[in-house]
Amino acid sequence: MTARVLVVDDISANVKLLEARLSAEYFDVLTASSGPEALDVCERERVDVVLLDVMMPGMDGFEVCRRLKSNPKTHHIPIILVTALDQVSDRVRGLQSGADDFLTKPVDDIALITRVKNLARLKTLTDEMLLRALTGRQLGINEDAALLKALSNEKSRVLIVDDDQRNANRIANWVATIHLPTVVSGPTAALDELSDGEYDLAIISLSLAQADALRLCSQIRSVSRTRHLPIILVVEPGYEARLLRALDMGVNDYIMRPVDENELLARVKTQVRRKRYSDHLRDRLEESIEASVIDALTGLHNRRYMETHLTTLVEEARRTGRALSVLLADIDHFKHVNDTYGHDIGDAVLREFSVRFRRNTRGIDLACRYGGEEFLVIMPDTDMSRAFQVGERLRASIASDVFQVSPACSINLTASVGLATLECGDDTPETVFRRADQALFVAKRAGRNRVEANAA
Image (cartoon, rainbow, N blue to C red; front, side, top):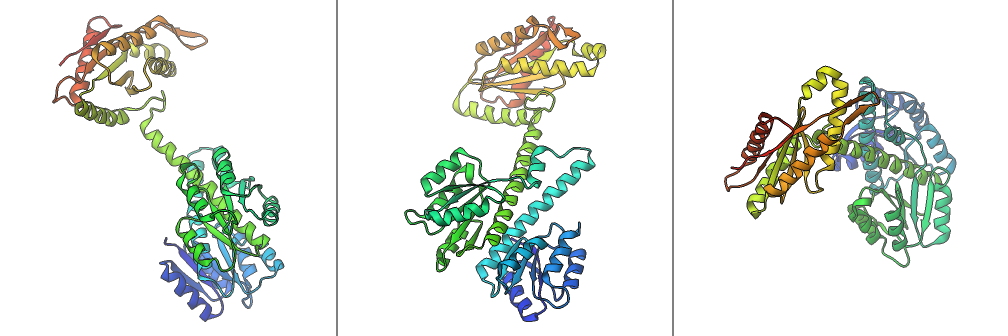
């Protein structure tokens, strides 16, 4: 992936080394040799990740991190502290300054690229989340509960898979300070847990004694329910070859034993945030796709979707020789409803009509709002006689019961229905629809509240 990485170190040799490693992975690298220069670059340039050396003269990395995280313009830039210091107090101080992750000198190539990629992806998701939240506020739309949860620090469920009970409990105790851990000892129990519960992260020991941890990771990635679940591997020194295979198959991150509590919690925080953000954006994408094919007022499919689906069904019916019918219904004198009662009541009528419309169609049928007060049903495997029964049932359901659209307003309505079927080899969606429309016109001319059919 491409991202802009700022490397900050007062020793030019360190800068050149990190720059070469990152450039080899096609990252766009910026450099700075001091804390003030780094702050200036982050103010002026788009930066996706900062690799920040701790031990610098004048302004050290902790202070640079604190200032970046306290500035609204740079608050959301992920920061990786690069240091030779490995004392717990230094990691705690880094977290308190706002650091997102740590790398210890000499920097391991696998660790470097893994950490930068993870935080660059998180930055991309963060930018998108904040942009959408800003757009919503500008449009006067309140952030919904899903967005607020994604941006919150609400506790998440974390699954820990390790058959060494002591190690598993130690990690669980650390995770429990910010999240809700569940410990299992093997793949079968892990897959059972993931199939039954909603988890935001899995922490898996690469050195399971009685099972292949990589196969478990592969199974998690192959199931749609858990395909996007972040995975952190706990790796023993000397397992680098298996680690590379794990990263190739989509494992998100890793941590080496002996596990440091602060390092672990930093990695957990990054992966949980990324999972929440990506879930939210994925849900919104699905909603956007749905909104493009669903009529907002009635909840039925819209004309755009109907036309595409009708084309597909006509082609399938012509290929297989199966029957296909189209029903077009129109509310009689609907203009009078709007003129007499107003458009709010008219909308309520359309919603109630769509409920009855859907109630009188089968699961295989596609019910759509064609436009205005016209509704359409596409009926696969349905000949004219069966289509006529459906049309008559629909007409009766409209005429027999009053439309109680508000406590003080009830309206008697009827509907006219036109039918057509796919009948000849050169029929097209347009010709079938045109015949249904002509049949509807005949029903209107014949006095309304009736069903008419049009044969080719």
